[in-house]
Image (tube, rainbow, N blue to C red; front, side, top):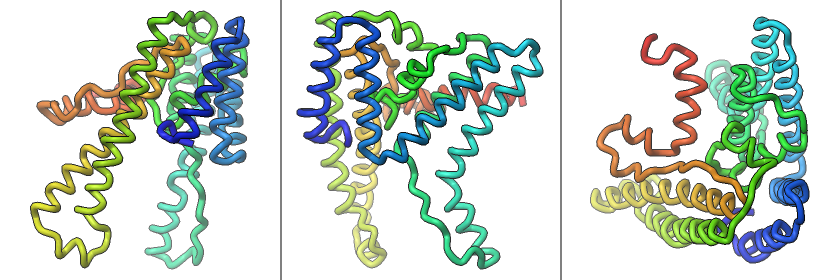
Length: 303
């Protein structure tokens, strides 16, 4: 199920939003959002839901152990073990086939490369869990004592499939203390509608142009004119942007309708004046994640 599908817009989200509006307390609203998110995620396969819940439990337990550790060495050890478990699982699903294919090219083995299905949204929710665990280690946020609330943060269907990457520190207060006004619901509907139009009209149109002007068949590609290839490349460029930014717009809009304030994820990247400026504007949550949790910890520009 995708945000731009009719079953999501006219069935799933309508029922979910109505249930959220009639839920009398924040605890009830969280229960509605959690159940809706688990149903949404399980739509792509129940086994994926088991993996998601398992990874959340690993980080839930790891963060609590890190938070309770008496000395810095133990804290670091618990954090490293938790992060390593996340990365091993992500690497297994994303890169096992890639590595085995390269090994086979060199050695001829294994004869059969297993086809491992990539769980939906695993990169996004893994990065969110990594940021949560590291932030607990850094003492920037307290460890969440409720497994249900951590699962809600990770699995919220607004953003667990295609982002933006939402840091726990940005929403931990809103998990238990949020209010929704008529103005915010209105703003959220407008933002969701803009994202829906981006996806259904602009992204899909650009995708159709790109498919026609940039054929996958080698013979057809060689017979294409240079002008067609240029226009096909431009169409593909805009398709990628409209796809990503559309889902971010819809996620931000749905969050606004239910009291969550997710940060902006795109800032007109094709108006950038340099490569560095482009990455500051493109998928901001992802680039800032790598900056804060990979680049700076490894030494940044000093190393």
